[in-house]
Length: 314
Length: 295
Image 1 (tube, rainbow over the protein chains, first blue to last red):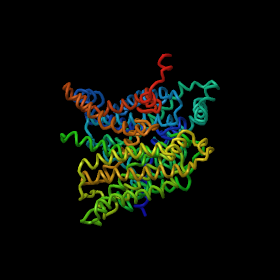
Image 2 (cartoon, one colour):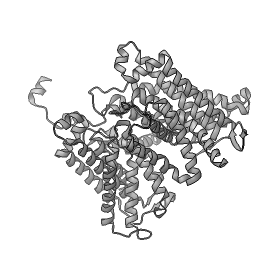
Image 3 (tube, helix red, strand yellow):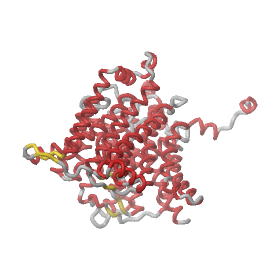
């Protein structure tokens, strides 16, 4: 029994990371109606940047300065800061090329696929940038926190994992508060509903859309940083793996629904850990994607999805 | 023919067949991000049917058609539930299908599981190239038939197409089914030419790349997917050759970075894809004398 509870706890810890990535996806789908494949890219960039700062991937000179300034065990702080800066700047560039400049002149009906294609272009570019600098092998680093953990009864809680689960939930709750209660949140919801009308109502769409991209980018970056700190192994394709499962979580909850993404992310994390435990690692794909396929067939909008989102557009 | 060029032509041919498979669905307005699933099924089915050891030992003349028919049937059956979904949901449903296929194949011991499956019957490169040409010609013909016109009309405006008496649902189902069968054919050729199939090679990135061939080449005409496949096969190679010609290793290493950025820029400057209907009209119809005089 306690083994089962232990697995559920582990699943929730992993689910916390999926929640952040799923919420990032759901924000962009809800606001701008496209699947943003730069989110796995930004997740991976943040994870690899954190790894590189901790493991001296930027060369001995940079590493020497960091060790002198922060000490060898605290290099992850610099890594996290650096990752956040890089991802914020990248988000602004990505906004330009997946939203602002991609408008068809002739109203072609595949125009809705444009942001999707651009984001896939960015995914290819970022992954190969990392591969051309550090190679495509799996890269590991020693955890700066060691094996710190505490027990409740016989259930083991790893300290960094617990902290990151709490952190991810706090961030998502703050975001939900921002969407529901603030003026910015109201503007965001108005844009999600109908961008043209929002523009007529005096909302500066051109200024607010970059904020959406930065929020989504920072969510995936935070998840990427926490991934490196908790699981200590990264590679160029880590974003693909994590994000594809997070997408499954988002769809489970329903597109464009932040609470749905939280629920779906935690559920899919548990499902992954439990099916590895009971059925073996090779059964994970069948259980996650089979469940998703079944759900899409029975209820094409996900569990809590809004019927109007994600239709007609790619 | 030099070995390197031969290798490139085979890759181009297989990519072209894949591209037409996704194109048939895309030209009736559906994005299929599950191409890898159909490719996997085709490659494994054909391999299993023709293998003498641990297989059924059929002749290849029977093996490939039966495999294609088998995958076509699967595509037909799943197209009904999948086509109930729209937009982003459809992209995700096809993607989920591919992941389920990968999961099932990894767990199927009689197909070799995660280790992959050797394919005994070998197909020489010219058969692959001829097949690709045949597929392309067939698709050109197909798009000029009444059914091709119906597909285009569903792609451009579904409601209007239905008003004009097009059975949009059946058009989508058949476009999806034929696309699935073509992807399986490509997969079967891949398996027989490279003599080895492995699910790890038919992953999410393959689905993404195949979708990109089509969207970048242009979904308006049957020339688009071929140009897209050509672009994706040769541009990285050209960048590599350019890098080694000017002696800059970073161009060679970073060629796919540049390639990704080219895709992004293409969407800004040429969002309809490389080949469009108006472009072909301009290129291949003679201007009337009055028009020339007017210019």
